[in-house]
Length: 223
Image 1 (cartoon, rainbow, N blue to C red):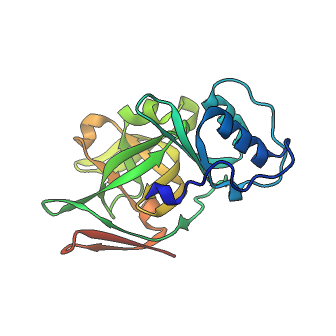
Image 2 (image 1 turned 120 degrees about the horizontal axis):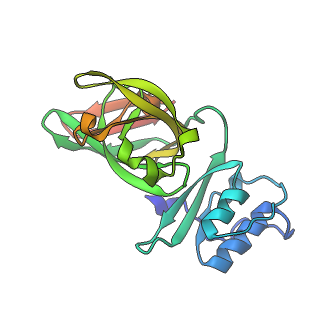
């Protein structure tokens, strides 16, 4: 799936060493990772960035949404630039047909999510059209890199009624080939969720979504 999105870091380079795109290409070659989505980068100049690889990327790509893919040792293998940042969900990129995992009458789908730390996490979410947003346990807050200032209080409906939540924004949510930037997420205490995480309407409403109960397939068509 992901291999279609990642180009070698030398693609799309320009001759100006101060150009952000060229600087990213040189940085990727120097540190041994690949980078995709360079076509999303404008012609702006690169800013001075110091620190670790992830720290420097955070500064260089401060105006863009992007994902990091790490190896088993925590080293960055790939960077995927998905879009320029915007205050609202940027809409969908592509359509997808994905197999679901059936448990009784419920369907689950494996979903890639990224928070403020840009690291890709794969979670298994229950498809729930009754949930207004994507719902995750509070134990994932530090893993996704959320800080207190990134979250605000709210409420959400779960089995048993309304519960207090912390509301944030995921940088990227990907189901198969369907990708959306800046998706609202509600964090709920782990014991309230009983191990179940939800793929709700903050993501699904951006598609013409069809759940094929016989084939165990979720079809997402970009609007």
